[in-house]
Length: 449
View 1 (cartoon, rainbow, N blue to C red):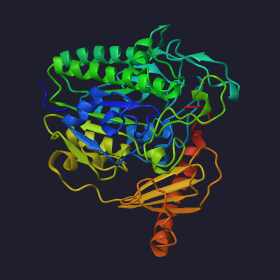
View 2 (tube, rainbow, N blue to C red):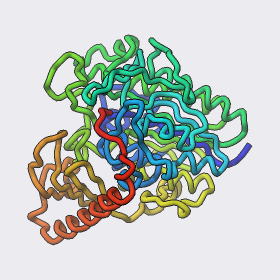
View 3 (cartoon, rainbow, N blue to C red):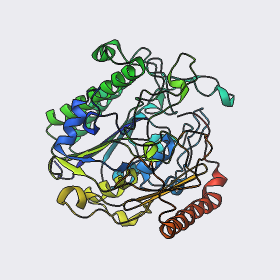
View 4 (cartoon, one colour):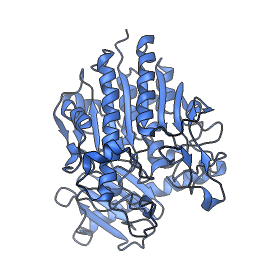
């Protein structure tokens, strides 16, 4: 048996910073994920690289800013929609070249058309759906009507459409993940298992047994708690199988979310037009689609019993694009061979080394943001999707104001102008690359996800 580590990535969809027991939630229970945090490192300042799903997934799987990976917006879900460019290496393709077995079980949302699917980006096996969201029981993508596309069934097993009507998708994902683990461990070669759940993204569905665990909660919070409880059970199922197979100690596990909680009215499923409040970003300002903290700061836990000491709380800023360089280095590869924007976190989590000293940037529509140490700058920030920006420039000291309640731009004009110029220069480079490299390929956008 090889001594190289295995990797498992659990990714949830629209899970807010405060929607996890180990992140402070007291009204829902996530004991399996909380145990991962207890046995490893819990990140208190982990970021998605985008406040929406397709760009954040592109960043996680490529180690690049979304604009450098060719995916800057939510990708379409109809069957001719393209996505992540084939020229961009993914974590799966890099690890596959290093002798790893690779599987994607769950939500893809990086392209639907042939040539854009998981198998085209380094995954030996894949099972799940390709669009941004599906009904949890019928596995139908209903949300293309606005762009002239009819609802379409969307469940696949290695590029073959399969019909499993009535099977709850969160549980089905766990079942298929376990089956892959059994085959992978039997082969004796290391593996990457990417498990992107669709929960707790709308439509909000959960089996009765999960709803019954939270009878006392208001309806919108009850369904959120139930869906996350199902995710927690699925994570527990996979972790127990790793332990049963004797590979838990040699497996590096990451759990995180793609962006902050959704306030979209379609969460209600009853015609209401008021914002949905079932998920929470805790004390953070903003939500999905926003570059304030609530849209991009997400839960994150990393566990690797053989290398990462348990009980850690990591307060340094890190982001999902750090996963590719971290995992490639751990696998014995050389991250310097690839174009990467993220940094290797292994020294930080394994031996208490220093966090990478760098600026981190975001862009979404008219919004641009950056973080430098304790300072966070948001330009034309929107707390909710489509809102008129209340302030063109917002500067926060996150060490004392994690909720971004107080604008310090007028108090620190020189710092503000320096950060503003830096952020706009970064954004200009993204825009130029988009025009020169990605725009001619018409990276898809505008569907819901």
